[in-house]
Image (cartoon, rainbow, N blue to C red):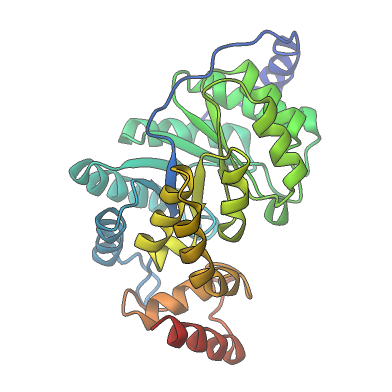
Length: 321
């Protein structure tokens, strides 16, 4: 593990990169379109269901999803051990390589040194990029957020990093100013997944971002309006259930076919919203169980959804046929 004097390095990073020197963002041509925040299927005994997971990944690629994101929020990574997370990332990479897809591995935590180590492990396994969530629980200042991501970016040079801003989970918002400062300072900070649902903030990032920096929606229901103002794609939950339809929404919006995109969007909007009636990914796993895709097993502290939510989701699925 990295030495604990990392706090000194972080302080140095914050000072070193406060001069305003700007770099050209790495150009990642494949980083555009629909990505899926993959669920992690578990067996009744709590272990990871490897065969089921591989089938789910293959199903994603077969239905048009070319960016796979294992070990994010939807993958219940917070309830998995480091070895389990690496195992899931490795399985994703193995299937993706065979099928021509890309892997953005979830490697973030609220421990900077541990995040650096884990991101390096994901790179060694063959991941194409890392999705790194803002530190949760610690509640860092904007300068602390900058120093956290600065240390990661400088420690895994040339490895693409996507910021992940989800204040509802982390209790800390990466401001537009901090996101732009990171994008302008580090060439390998190449994108952000914005799940703040703060349109003013996201539009500021889109309007002022450096060339090649990508902005992804982190919320299924707001994807179309964000693409309309310049966003580059979506990291999706509902695509676990409906990969083909979700990929089509994003593709058609990015190519300007708004009529077709809206038609599909409104068809599945109720399911998009219902996926978050209770803590995600519990609703999503119930739907996938109803579709005979996996067993409805979650890791504590998450539990299966309540009966009223089950009833609501069954009604939505019936309408979708």
